[in-house]
Amino acid sequence: MNGGQRVELTGTWSASLEWLVQRLAPAFPALVFAELKYRVKSWQKLDWCIEDAAAAIDAVGAPRTLLVGFSMGGAVASQAAADPSVEAVVGLAPWFPNRLPLDALRGHRLRVLHGSLDRWLPGIPGVSPASSRRGFDRAQALGADGEYTLIPGAVHGLALRAHRGRALPLPRARTWAKLVAEELTRFESQAPPG
Image 1 (cartoon, rainbow, N blue to C red):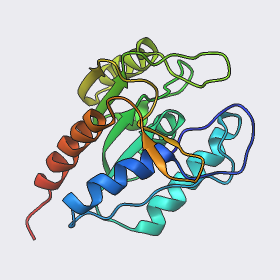
Image 2: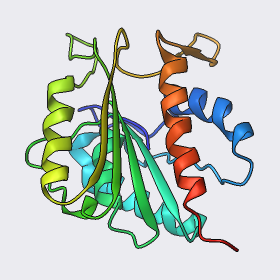
Image 3: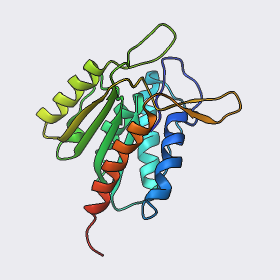
Image 4: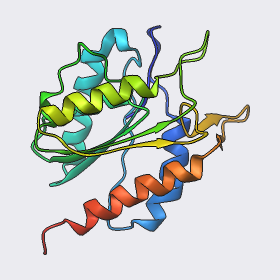
């Protein structure tokens, strides 16, 4: 689940998630990967983004779901976790504003990964590690289980879109991918026999 911004723009594909999936999907052939493209990618339309996430989960129709949410996508995933198929959420520099209820994470695994250098800068979106840590702590207090990992030297995200459309990795992108792979391995190993 992609990030967003204040301005209401038509949804686009995420360079960070594209880069991540290109590296992880071949290593996990038994898993189905799907990327959510919002109608409007803006936290001003967060309810719409959550509706889009619910529709995507329904369209995939998997009996078990692990959601990966980047930035605003973390907020979206925290709400979409109410779907009965969702077992775990991985937040990549997730935005968990204080007003956002996190009750849907109760009983779920929540793994938060955050770059130590992430922060909002003029004209550049970001989420402070302190903010995602507060959200993680709130989710744990409500009954979520999981881990919070700060990635030294990492910024907000894993990749940027190059001029010709290719996703180019940012510093520590491989560390992000390794940690998400750990969660996918954990998720895959907990599948019921069958």
